Length: 410
Image (cartoon, rainbow, N blue to C red; front, side, top):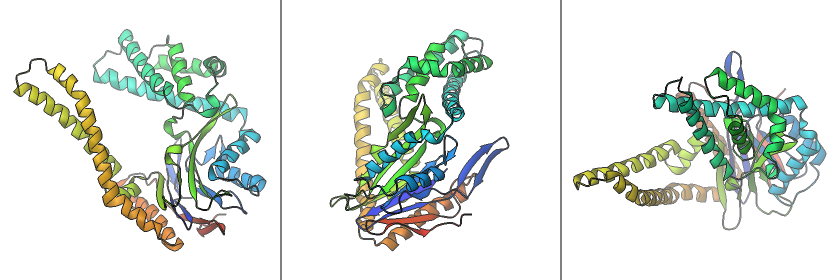
């Protein structure tokens, strides 16, 4: 896992990242503090990237790919940071995705396996929770169908990955036939129905076409710096998965993109394991925020039932149904109010301070945010998934990409 952060104001963009990388093997999980997650994309232009989740793409290290991009396209200026992201995607395609046919098959196998495990685990939980017998094939089949339908419905309404907009299920079935055969065999081994091939294919296909990435099978790439026509820096996050049928699974994470302007003078953008940084910025841990708002909704629903009982209303379900829209509206208003308080009391003050930071202050803040996350993981987690030396780089319009702190590499 990873902790990375970008801090931007009108003077510069600062990037910082830890060095921890998690490796899964036959002997278990091993964490090494040797990974590089900050890179320059050009020796001539002010543009760089940070990465999180996977340090390889289809078996090829991202570090090698970034170095090759810098050598081949580093001298070419792009008008915006988004154009650099688009140029990088084009570079991957032109170089046959730096992958072999075998690695592409392996990626598809990983995606199908991840999808299968999610469905299997959810069905197992439902079967256990409802006390369904493992021999009740019809009931289990109904649960599998329900889970697959739910995933299909969510994915069908989600944004599609750009290169899969015209991809048909028929094409996918040709590519995945052998792997789906293996999946059906796996279903039989755990007492899941084996006569639901079409439902499984439809679910997997719909999932693979969207911007959902299971089990961190994608890599987050945060492009940061200046386009040729930019006065101030910007951030443009992208998530890249793998290749299926010569189509690249990727999407531009526009919700996390940010740009410094005269009106938006500073920003602090944590990625991956950003919970500790967000706690500092917002005054409340993200998990605590979710727990509180969820508990409030439960209490509101409980209160409605109690009021119905006190009034002697016989049809309690009808009262609850009528109250649901009111509860949902109240919940939304509560969350908006909390967000306003967070912005007013915490976030805006911090961001307003960053607006006036010089580059040294920004560097110190970025490094400190990673260090705080490292400390929290060291104290509370059995697996220290954030740690090791902290790499810090600065990008300015006039001086380009410059290292401030870089761990020793062989």
